[in-house]
Image (cartoon, helix red, strand yellow):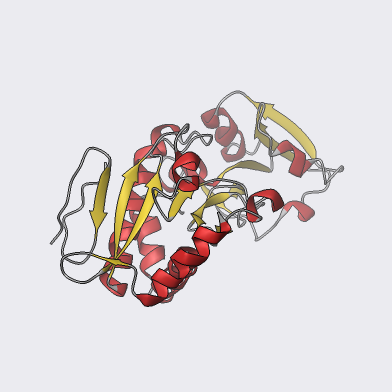
Length: 262
């Protein structure tokens, strides 16, 4: 079903096996996409994508393998439903953006923030994986958000930048914890009303050790996430295919399979 392997790249397409372990140029690439892109041996369109599987500067810790598994399978599903093949080119934190600027690939998968100065150089897809902070409450709690927690105690990991989100709600009482288990135990025992934690570790803990005890009560509280960055034509095709998979319920199943939602 799949083919192609080299020290720096892997291809994902309808006839391959998975092995995943400048403005002017972009305009030209868009025209190439419209014309049919580069082609594999079976005529499928091929999109070269750079990926740093360490996801710097985000540290997913033990969940890195789950994020990589989800990303790999997402590309596989896109290939099945669209006929678009992906050639994944391995990079690291030092060479990922450099490779994009030097046109070694049309796009990258990254957490690069969509700041204005980045958008001036690249197109950004919608997030294919939300990784920002979410609200965690006891399993039997009513639906709520931070606005409902005035005068309540909310826990957060020491040093977590999500504290700046809580600062927007001056009546919330904040308590810091040194570890995720200590933080979530405090919610489970009723010592605090809720906790704020990044989506990826929150999903794994709530879906496993705290299943039926805690739940995620909010969407991501900011726009932090993994997305495609690069040429407009590549990004638009990625967004279109992702939207199709979401309608088919494929995305939800993948997130559940890789323990990235709860």
